Length: 535
Image (cartoon, rainbow, N blue to C red; front, side, top):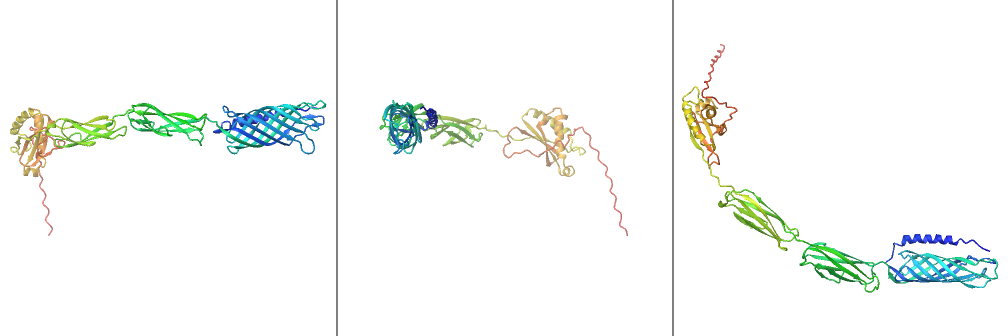
């Protein structure tokens, strides 16, 4: 009698499932794995063998137990010893199967589900019903899945093993030699002894990472994957300064006197209770910056002052390092009164016509680095005041028909005046025209007309043509029938002086030549007497 074996296909399916689970949980490595595990649980076996009286039935009464020790170098690989027993019920067929196997087991340890595969070899005790028992060689391939409840305890959800062996009895004529058995089991697992599975690591930090010489640097070391129940030791070294607290998790580096440049602090974290995978190192970098001089600027307000007046000089100073600063002031003139970031400059007589330069200096109190700035203040030269000069007059009394006409006497006066003015280019001539009381009543603009006519003679009618832009006609109001001449030099008038009269609008008062005819008088019509009232 023979049977078709289908178990290998099922084995392949189970192995594929285990591989899938392995891919899911392989990354979820725990921080520690057990050195040893012991398993015990219920077991069901399908002998899958035939004898003359028929197929050996499944045996549902059984147990399976195993002990596994995992290697220290490869924590997932271990040597396993497995034993199982399957007993026939008290009635019916009385076939029994027992196994004693040993081999290698590879488990993908994780925090929750841990799949495993294994290969074993050993012996099997086969006792078909009514037949003699035999011990035969056996080879097994299998795997399973454990659910971790706690660090030491787990439930074996399922365990499947394919076991190949054989049974030969000479008196049997219709039996199969090969027994391709498969076994299912589930139970409880206990773990003890532990390996650190993940490599220990260390991470170092420095704060701040950029400093000035003399500033402290705080460093800290943090370990990863160390046993949290063990006390760790720390050892610090640095090539940039003096380490304070070199045996603590956090330390401080004194950088006094350290030159600008890049430096590092190195830490070693050690678990003295762990023999292997017990130490990790890390490094934190920091740099000492080159100190910079203060940044300064100066300004003056106002930038131009007279003798005896003050100007305020302000220095705006910042230190890149934020260090305190001291201030100093100097000047090449005037009287300087410093007051921190400001100074007051007062001009003296000796400074007239000069530009005074004030220099401010800011010095940081730590690195003794300085920076300067300047501000300039102008002191105008002393000015001489000028006086208005009286240059004579012309009268207009001899020609009542033409009271505005430049007559011969006035012409001679103006010719002499024109020659004088040619020698006096820096200044101007004010011509102030006046009228007497009667003229003021009859001709309000007569004074202005006289001054405009005089300008016309000096610039047009006369033999000496003067620059019209330097002659200003002005109206002096009530006085005499005359025009007065005042020469106003360039410069500031001395105190108490002012130009006389008001400026004549030459667009409204047209000049008249001394040769122009007198205007004709208009005849006045007699007014009609009013009619007598009716009687």
